[in-house]
Length: 451
Image (tube, rainbow, N blue to C red; front, side):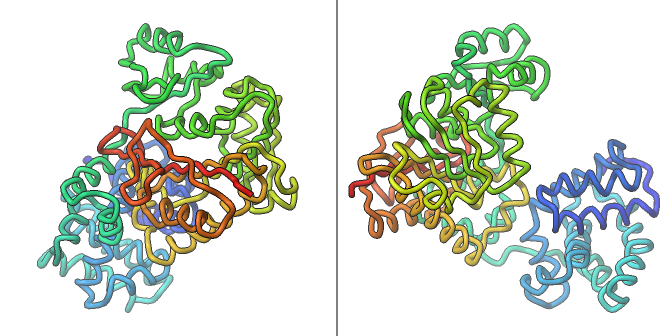
């Protein structure tokens, strides 16, 4: 931790930000709101506390195990505490064992000024547990008890997720994937060919001093190294390019929408794929863009205006599962299903997502994914196509959902042949891998309605 001036109110600001982050997602929004209230937004204290919060979320499951060891309880009991208390226990575990800077001032602030605040909410019996975690782990740190826990600590990825990965990857590649999941891929821009060419965008980036290169796998996609500033921001503001990972940009191309068709995007916002579909259709046809989140739909409308694709996009602020009722059945030529998922393919971008993976959460997501896929099949015409994609490395959200669809719905699998690798557990489907392709993790399956 950098040597900044820390005052007693600062520890309460950190604790309140951690508590608020349990209710408001992404946690960066909660943090900004609380830090503004305490007058530390944008300050050196803000930067130090933001770094701590990122590390707490990346280490969350390990911190629960460490705190549980110190208290002689199960990690599940730590995780079930009220939001402020469990976050304080995690903070104590982090400061005792995982804080590389090892600045004693924050530990002192937590004990002298944080504990009274916690006690005012939950009583001194609970507050003293925070001090106990800090004291005991300082003397006797938590250590992994298995190979899965060793990898969990090394890569900050839950052991349960590691076990699932072993279903779809050779053992020799597991650690390579875990390394890649902690490393953000080079950012990408999808070129809006309604307004520019890939060569135009590359030339502007190169002239502005960026290292930039065209994708080897996805047409009209450019990758670069550098911040989202200057020329990159201008290209996006002018609607010449859209920030999008290469693996995500591949989806609309695989759907292969044609001019004049009717296309339905069941989980459309914030609009990256929807506007790409409109571009590929050359603004001829109709796109119904469903999403249930109002704020994300506002972003879709803004993106459609900026890219000039709004004229064929019809936003529908509703759950995509209602599409058969709202549009009718067998009305679309093609349907895209990119449903809510665990985001395990993009853990470097979503540090708070990695510890949300559990049996119950994966089951709930998979059920929603099946329902959306069933709605898509009802909406598409006979002989039409449904593309199912998820930003997940879990087979429960990819291959298992598609296998269910093949067994229970009037569809057949249309084999995909690139640009990424065949799935090792469901031939005909495809996966983009962070460690093999330098992208986020993505799963793809193309289905044709046959009845």
